[in-house]
Length: 631
Ligand code: COA
Ligand code: AMP
Image 1 (tube, protein in one colour):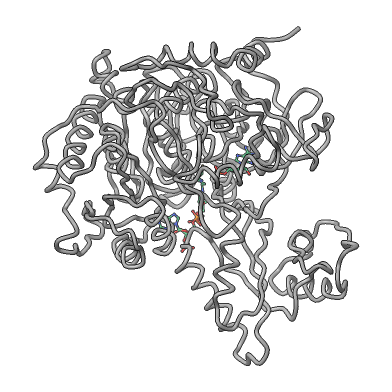
Image 2: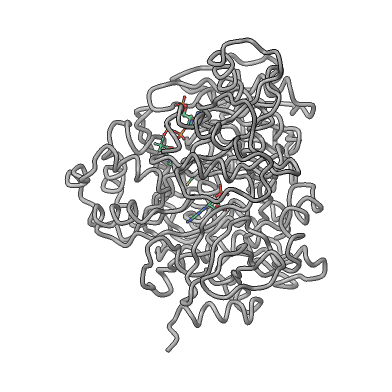
């Protein structure tokens, strides 16, 4: 007998227009759509074309008008800054409409890009929503990226304005943001006219006269502005994510489809009601932060928690439990890495006992594979369902989950359960043929993707087609590999590209190799992701030096580590590299990264029949042993 999930899922695929048309009744439209699903430029499908909407109106104004004015919209809790603050829906609306006035005063209008380089502070949320209010397109860059990465994003997005904070705070270290931004602006060719800078007391920045504007001064001089209706298909934001080449991909999300899908996900995937408190412990610079700190909880009239701190060390491994109990969090979302960090410090979850977590109903995990050990540890510690769910920056909301609001399905540890309604998930072999249940292959989604997912890449339709649609015609390629089992449960096993996942952060080893290759002494290099008990994976570099280089290897390695920090940023977590005489290659010259990864992780492997010289593998094993890998 089929259950409610089966019914809802089947309907979403049988009648997508009816399904999403109905979901769209739940949001405010200035003008209804002409077509729910516009196929006229397939495979560039668009949702709700002809419709007019405003994302900020749906996040704030609608709730103030509808009786939630005095309910808390946002709670800011920063153990690192020693600050707690909260905003009711009315207060957040006031702050956002005034800051939207700052943007308008600086000449920002519909369609202009605004780059935001800020940590998890309320002003980042205010900046994002102010952009949405006037139809400007925001692009948030995570604070852990260095100047070069920031410059690449500035050149691609060509923002009219930058919003920045003077600093971020990493546990007890102040990270000045302005020197990074200054350097990025020097490097960039598309220089924005102005920067609005929020001076944080922990580390004030020196402003550049004529370019930089003090946030508070600009804010106090501005008058509130109203929402600007935009086309449902207009871009809401660009979020850059690692691609297979050195250049990040500018993932676009639109206004209408994004609003409908994210609003739908709150009751259906997460089982949350309006008025309840929801917490995603992520960063506004990541997809999770965009969708589940800012947008979805506010669309749904929830109270969202913005936490500026770590799971451990701010001040201890009970930090998450404190926040859950202090604010009555009903549903909590974080990455498995955070739980691994807590488990390492408090293996018996003793700190949980200091807090009342009786209000918590469910715990969601995403961003990387949730290993069954960690998941079961979390179940025991919290005594609530712990749900692994799977998604990507490109989709903005989950592709596979145990949809608590529809039907709670039996858990299979290690699987994010089944496809979320709207996603027709399949597994294909290299010829594009669907494989039987239990057989590994490329995980794809049959087009059209549901609303909310990327319609394209910023200014790059061809790049979108090439990266996602070209390998399997009629399907979106997720670049994850895995299988569907006989019960329709999905198992995500690995990536099919060069992306590695470090502490839930997606990083390109290709980009890291470009950085290593730029060192004057390096002839050849490879970066692999090796297993790490805390962060899931860590990058490790292997370099071959140019003939005649006589310098100490340790000196070169130290320079490589520093280069990675300077070019990509601390977030790359690149701390290990070794010098080798040669790299293992196939006879056609392809570097055998997968084989090296298996050697490092002490996983059984077959010597590839195409290998040029099998003796190289022994040399690599020795080198990896020197770094504490390879058994
Ligand atoms: N600004 C500047 N630097 C930053 C930064 C930011 N916003 N975020 C991270 N960094 C730095 C860190 O300080 C660290 O620098 P270091 O090498 O000098 O110590 C480096 O980037 C790596 O950061 P991170 O991966 O966060 O490692 P960590 O050792 O500081 O913390 C965890 C480890 C497990 C506590 C942390 O990774 C964590 O909380 N993970 C949760 C995962 C998560 O939220 N993922 C988001 C997707 S849902
Ligand atoms: P990002 O775009 O940074 O969110 O990274 C998306 C990638 O993270 C996916 O393509 C997967 O490789 C991985 N990922 C996210 N969630 C999960 C999950 N629940 N299980 C396994 N891998 C995941």
